[in-house]
Image (cartoon, rainbow, N blue to C red; front, side):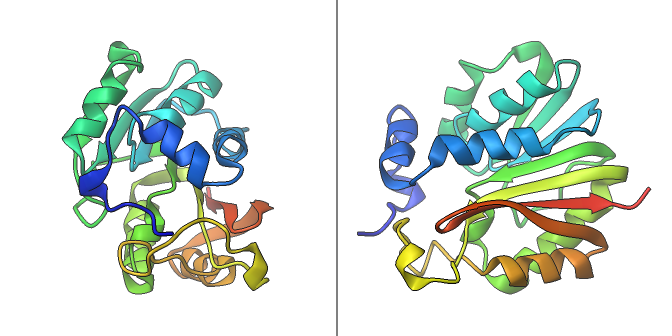
Length: 199
């Protein structure tokens, strides 16, 4: 079974689809939001906002923060606008490959989006993220990965639009970008990686 291409995603059913196809979806989202602590965030950047699931949880953790959310789908962002607090968010149509908004951001998050990039594009993105994270800030990445045990690869991927990499490779690329990075949570083929920028 392959994950549906984004042109076929229906924003109204996206959350239900994710919960049916991605094991531990809610646990991943909670792990991403939780990993943004103990950083005190005034500005947050969310890469791949989708319907706003991650953004909502991160804003709940950082109740004084303003969030800038990016997604390539205007339809997804329209759905996100229905649930996110308008006074605390700015949502923009943008691809992960596009220039990032000007920083600094104390926290940058991304859940289930970066695996759509190949390895070279991931490494390049991590460098651009490092440039907009404030000193002492944090990048939290939660995503589908290539697990150590093949039997743990249970999330549907198509090998074309979905291009997961190993945790080890992504930690190396994060380190090469200038972060101090560790994996803080893993469940099968889902993982959360925390990358801190030195103060």
